[in-house]
Image 1: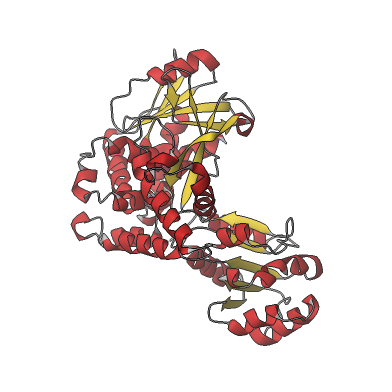
Image 2: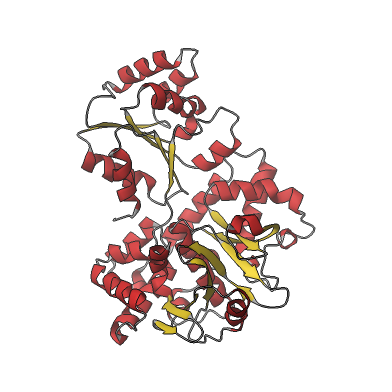
Length: 438
């Protein structure tokens, strides 16, 4: 499947002296697939090793040999001159060898013409929790997220629809009625599948016949997530805390307090008991954090209130699977309170895939802006609505108080622009267009 990160990989490989590359991302987001596709389409000689299977390489890097001796032995084990032209080494599950990760600095400094790309399950957690010397500044790091909505449309070969959406976004003109409805239908399909490639692939294979959609795909991914929670933890007790925190996120997003509360995980829970669990989930890329800012000014990070935040799941399909939402209820918008929760998680997922850091704003009274983003047009407020009812009290309060260049209202309504209030309306299916105002 076509992924936006592919061009980043091509750009990296085209550098005269490219640093070793680490590709981070949660399980099942397609890391191995996109790397395999990239290396076989761009290199004549591809050496792929999986450290779960190649214990000989793990043992080599646990030995007392120096870095150069290990490198020479590595070339023998893979039977390849790793510095010859059009050659790349792909190491999967690299988290199995801390010494090999540390030696990426050696590859960068002493063998800079070599191309090496690495990935692994829970690699982000391993990097954060290990005590070895990480090669800071000597590696390049990319993160792969679940497929965003534009990639979802690519999977159905809807490139023409994407272009029409972009034109309406740029010109603030309504998308032709049938096209608007078609895009909304795809949006609701995406809420069912989410962006996990296997889930999307299944919807493509059944030609959007939702009755045939295999709901067990996402359930199995969730089960694998829970099994992962037993890895790289300090104890079984911590694994249980991680799972409890993770399971609480959908209901936490429905809190009237509009913030994550540790006390809602389990009766009597304290933040100090769950901070390491929170760090684990963030490092795993299974969740993302949106921080409250006291003042929506640049730099947004400088105005963060550290003790007030929201947590979102990395994939809206996984959220619906956790909630056991029926496919028919998604298609008919019969979601009650959780319609807004699911919609907000979708927008958070889209923004993260564009590498926006997530922030939100609240007034001292009752106004709240779901997201504020730092763009070339300044700090822009985003108000998210799950349907056609777009009363914008909070957005109006924000606009009067801070006078941004414009505000953005995201809903199921068509494109438009209120010249008097400076509010740009975009449909939920067009959130990916915000990437073009960065």
